[in-house]
Length: 256
Ligand SMILES: Nc1ncnc2c1ncn2[C@@H]1O[C@H](COP(=O)(O)OP(=O)(O)OP(=O)(O)O)[C@@H](O)[C@H]1O
Image (cartoon, rainbow, N blue to C red; front, side, top):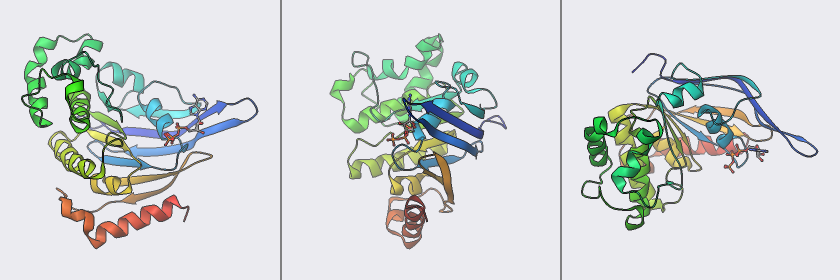
């Protein structure tokens, strides 16, 4: 992985002009996610999480400041297939099979799928969907659809992975299983990962650092380091150290 395969935001602002007021969705936000790190972003509704993701994906431009993704502009990184994204609702094409959905970014980038057949088969194995290659999304459970979305996000071998509440629609038990799976997948590839989540437990379990945001204007309130050793096992959820970190994040969310 390249030395600069991280995400860097320097004094990034994004404002939206409303009818009467200006909404400061992000106000001079600076954040450095080093190559290979796992960062979770948590904050109240409207604090600018989606805005930050859209900027880092090159789908929107900041009003001020600079963003670097994998050492390039967000647009250049996306065009080069250096970024991967998985959303909450999986957003699979219902008429495409599992393997065809996973191959979608290759088609979008105009890459020859033939060169990726081994990669696709490996990803299907990695996310535990062997035997479901030809299945359609309608034949899969919610958890399986999210696995497809994660495999799809990884197909271009991105250096930077964005996850926008990928397990938000799943029940608590399945979500925890998927958290364990995601940690395993991340530890194998070590893409620089930025996870947007509403789950404090999910953030503590997965991340090296949890960035707690505040709204109006959208700013970083606190960054909480998560020093728990890896691989983290499911029983870590019930430890005192885990609860203490959850409490620290809850307090930061309450503005303390
Ligand atoms: N295209 C837009 N036009 C006008 N205002 C916008 C636009 N996009 C976002 N905003 C405003 O910017 C602020 C931040 O929105 P954003 O969607 O980034 O928040 P969020 O933290 O992702 O919220 P949630 O957790 O509810 O998804 C909000 O006040 C929102 O109304």
